[in-house]
Length: 437
Ligand code: GLV
Ligand code: MN
Ligand code: MN
Image (cartoon, rainbow, N blue to C red; front, side, top):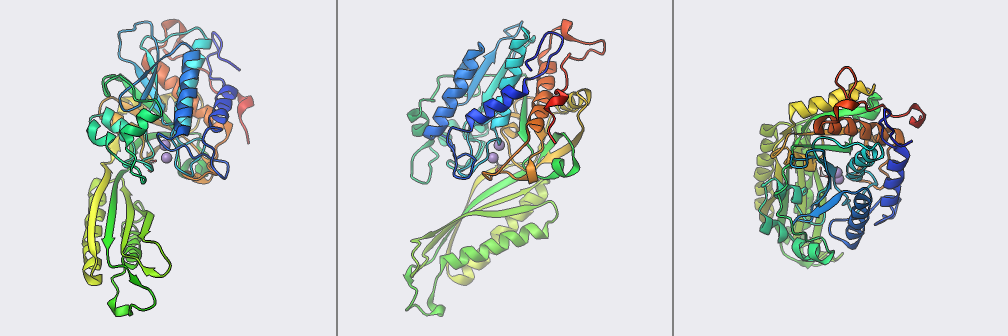
């Protein structure tokens, strides 16, 4: 049911239907999505998002990194906006909710305000950040990073995909090289709704995660160089096998993470062997390493250990070694006032909640550097994400979007007439009929 005067709540059916329609763009092969950044599918998703925003009277601005901002004017238009959003790009085998929930949840906030004929004091802007996933163009959160002044724009635009196509050229090709200077729009605050992408909320039966921190991350790209030679006629003692070096390094990554258990994680997610022929000893191996931990000292220690052990392996095996850092952020601590708004919103909507540390990176990590920022998590089935089978219930989506609505409206200043005696916005909890088992 749409929000009404005195009965202000989001429209769960509309939110759920919008997620379903968006998921038709860039379908995967197992029910999820393959809508990687700056592909034709990403372009189509952006055009649909722009149309939906324009239908509710929001003005859409695109910056020179392709970040999209849909402005819903407040009663005092000159004020800095409260921003809310996430990303519409996906992993190559991504789910329907990672990122999408945050963008379409923010759209539902504006749709609900508009239905109720309400404007907040500050403008609200829905944001779609370009290339959050970082699969096609490393690092992740590239365009929000430029927005926050972490990355140089020319450097970001020169990033290339595996086929050698540049970010800048692909942005122009899909028609989303905008004119707004990146970083020119100043958020008063930023809120991001996201699925947890981990198992905690579902296992504990908790409706809402109040995200206080995000664990830090370092991404390395390692190239091992050996010598291509015949698999049949090259004696074992004469080999310089880059593929074997990659396998040994993969073991090392796993061991380092276990040494720092239970909070550390370490993964080799991508490994390319060259020339990749069954009867040629690999002459070159390129692998990606992803280390994460909530404490910077532990994270840095894992990276140092990796460098040391990689040197030893390369030396022993007669391999060349090059290690490039292709992504890093320190652990993030979100703004306490904004986090408090999320916690209060969950409380007054009668939703169970707990504080939580995000295992995944988010655009919010960078925006936190330039504006007070917080995140809202809802559960996902089995904690599964970065998988086409990623699933959430409509109830979880509606709960999360309701908390986003209340936190954003409170921060943007919902008119005095809409406040209860306690000074709270008259935003109502999700309808009980929307709860699913
Ligand atoms: C972003 O999706 C990440 O890898 O955490
Ligand atoms: Mn995401
Ligand atoms: Mn993701």
